[in-house]
Length: 157
Image 1 (cartoon, one colour):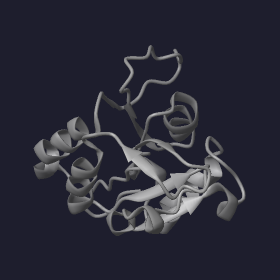
Image 2 (tube, one colour):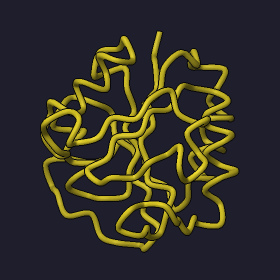
Image 3 (cartoon, helix red, strand yellow):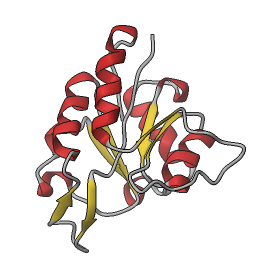
Protein backbone atom coordinates (compact mmCIF):
# COMPACT_ATOMS: atom_id res chain seq x y z
CA UNK A 1 0.00 0.00 0.00
CA UNK A 2 1.44 3.37 -0.97
CA UNK A 3 1.04 6.56 1.01
CA UNK A 4 1.50 10.03 -0.38
CA UNK A 5 2.72 13.26 1.07
CA UNK A 6 2.65 16.68 -0.43
CA UNK A 7 4.57 19.70 0.65
CA UNK A 8 4.27 22.78 -1.43
CA UNK A 9 4.37 26.52 -1.17
CA UNK A 10 1.13 27.61 -2.85
CA UNK A 11 2.26 31.22 -2.72
CA UNK A 12 4.16 33.63 -4.88
CA UNK A 13 5.48 35.70 -2.00
CA UNK A 14 4.79 36.51 1.60
CA UNK A 15 5.54 39.40 3.88
CA UNK A 16 8.30 39.03 6.50
CA UNK A 17 5.76 38.11 9.16
CA UNK A 18 3.91 35.83 6.71
CA UNK A 19 0.54 37.43 7.38
CA UNK A 20 -0.26 38.41 3.80
CA UNK A 21 0.05 35.86 1.06
CA UNK A 22 -0.55 36.07 -2.67
CA UNK A 23 -1.57 32.67 -4.01
CA UNK A 24 -1.07 31.30 -7.49
CA UNK A 25 -4.49 31.34 -9.20
CA UNK A 26 -4.82 27.55 -9.10
CA UNK A 27 -3.30 26.93 -5.67
CA UNK A 28 -6.23 27.03 -3.26
CA UNK A 29 -8.61 24.90 -5.31
CA UNK A 30 -5.86 22.40 -6.12
CA UNK A 31 -4.73 22.24 -2.50
CA UNK A 32 -8.31 21.56 -1.38
CA UNK A 33 -8.64 18.77 -3.95
CA UNK A 34 -5.35 17.17 -2.90
CA UNK A 35 -6.11 17.47 0.82
CA UNK A 36 -9.49 15.81 0.26
CA UNK A 37 -7.65 12.73 -1.08
CA UNK A 38 -4.53 12.49 1.09
CA UNK A 39 -3.24 14.03 4.31
CA UNK A 40 -0.99 16.96 3.46
CA UNK A 41 1.79 18.33 5.65
CA UNK A 42 3.74 21.55 5.21
CA UNK A 43 7.52 21.58 5.49
CA UNK A 44 8.97 25.05 5.57
CA UNK A 45 12.31 26.73 5.98
CA UNK A 46 10.45 29.98 6.56
CA UNK A 47 8.09 31.33 9.16
CA UNK A 48 4.72 30.99 7.45
CA UNK A 49 1.83 30.61 9.88
CA UNK A 50 -0.77 28.51 8.06
CA UNK A 51 -3.42 29.35 10.63
CA UNK A 52 -2.84 33.08 10.23
CA UNK A 53 -3.01 32.95 6.43
CA UNK A 54 -6.17 30.83 6.54
CA UNK A 55 -5.10 27.51 5.02
CA UNK A 56 -4.21 25.39 8.06
CA UNK A 57 -7.38 23.32 7.65
CA UNK A 58 -5.86 21.73 4.53
CA UNK A 59 -2.85 20.37 6.42
CA UNK A 60 -2.41 17.45 8.83
CA UNK A 61 0.51 19.33 10.37
CA UNK A 62 3.18 21.92 9.73
CA UNK A 63 6.87 21.32 10.41
CA UNK A 64 9.25 24.25 10.29
CA UNK A 65 13.03 24.27 10.17
CA UNK A 66 13.22 26.23 13.43
CA UNK A 67 10.96 23.76 15.23
CA UNK A 68 12.83 20.76 13.84
CA UNK A 69 16.35 22.12 14.20
CA UNK A 70 17.41 21.58 10.58
CA UNK A 71 16.22 23.00 7.28
CA UNK A 72 15.52 21.52 3.88
CA UNK A 73 17.43 20.01 2.12
CA UNK A 74 18.70 18.16 5.24
CA UNK A 75 17.36 14.61 5.23
CA UNK A 76 16.32 14.78 8.89
CA UNK A 77 13.45 17.24 8.30
CA UNK A 78 12.01 15.00 5.57
CA UNK A 79 12.41 11.93 7.79
CA UNK A 80 10.72 13.73 10.70
CA UNK A 81 7.71 14.47 8.48
CA UNK A 82 7.58 10.83 7.39
CA UNK A 83 7.67 9.70 11.02
CA UNK A 84 4.79 12.02 11.91
CA UNK A 85 2.85 10.56 8.99
CA UNK A 86 3.65 7.02 10.10
CA UNK A 87 5.25 6.28 6.74
CA UNK A 88 8.59 5.18 5.41
CA UNK A 89 10.35 7.68 3.13
CA UNK A 90 9.61 5.61 0.01
CA UNK A 91 5.89 5.89 0.75
CA UNK A 92 5.88 9.68 0.76
CA UNK A 93 5.72 12.06 -2.19
CA UNK A 94 7.27 15.44 -1.45
CA UNK A 95 5.93 18.18 -3.70
CA UNK A 96 7.79 21.44 -4.10
CA UNK A 97 8.98 24.12 -6.45
CA UNK A 98 12.60 24.54 -5.40
CA UNK A 99 15.00 22.25 -7.27
CA UNK A 100 17.57 21.91 -4.49
CA UNK A 101 15.62 22.43 -1.27
CA UNK A 102 12.51 20.46 -2.21
CA UNK A 103 13.03 18.02 -5.04
CA UNK A 104 16.70 17.05 -4.78
CA UNK A 105 16.58 17.19 -0.97
CA UNK A 106 13.58 14.89 -0.79
CA UNK A 107 15.04 12.48 -3.33
CA UNK A 108 18.35 12.29 -1.46
CA UNK A 109 16.38 11.57 1.74
CA UNK A 110 14.70 8.62 0.03
CA UNK A 111 11.29 10.21 -0.62
CA UNK A 112 9.54 10.26 -3.94
CA UNK A 113 9.57 13.74 -5.43
CA UNK A 114 7.34 15.97 -7.52
CA UNK A 115 8.60 19.21 -9.02
CA UNK A 116 6.10 22.01 -9.61
CA UNK A 117 7.95 23.81 -12.39
CA UNK A 118 5.82 26.90 -13.03
CA UNK A 119 8.65 28.83 -14.68
CA UNK A 120 9.75 26.28 -17.30
CA UNK A 121 13.17 25.92 -15.71
CA UNK A 122 15.73 23.34 -16.78
CA UNK A 123 16.45 20.45 -14.46
CA UNK A 124 20.02 20.74 -13.12
CA UNK A 125 20.83 17.30 -11.68
CA UNK A 126 21.93 14.42 -13.90
CA UNK A 127 21.95 11.96 -10.98
CA UNK A 128 18.48 12.82 -9.62
CA UNK A 129 15.27 13.00 -11.61
CA UNK A 130 11.88 13.93 -10.08
CA UNK A 131 9.36 11.10 -10.00
CA UNK A 132 6.74 13.56 -11.24
CA UNK A 133 6.82 17.02 -12.79
CA UNK A 134 3.96 19.42 -13.46
CA UNK A 135 3.60 23.09 -14.32
CA UNK A 136 0.76 23.70 -11.85
CA UNK A 137 -0.61 22.29 -8.63
CA UNK A 138 -3.87 21.66 -10.54
CA UNK A 139 -2.02 19.28 -12.84
CA UNK A 140 -0.85 17.32 -9.78
CA UNK A 141 -4.42 17.24 -8.42
CA UNK A 142 -5.64 16.00 -11.82
CA UNK A 143 -2.98 13.28 -11.82
CA UNK A 144 -3.91 12.27 -8.28
CA UNK A 145 -7.61 12.08 -9.22
CA UNK A 146 -6.77 9.89 -12.22
CA UNK A 147 -4.47 7.68 -10.14
CA UNK A 148 -6.80 7.34 -7.15
CA UNK A 149 -7.89 3.85 -8.05
CA UNK A 150 -4.26 2.68 -7.78
CA UNK A 151 -3.32 4.30 -4.48
CA UNK A 152 -4.75 4.29 -0.97
CA UNK A 153 -5.26 7.88 0.28
CA UNK A 154 -3.83 7.38 3.77
CA UNK A 155 -0.97 9.83 4.29
CA UNK A 156 0.50 12.95 2.73
CA UNK A 157 2.99 15.62 3.86
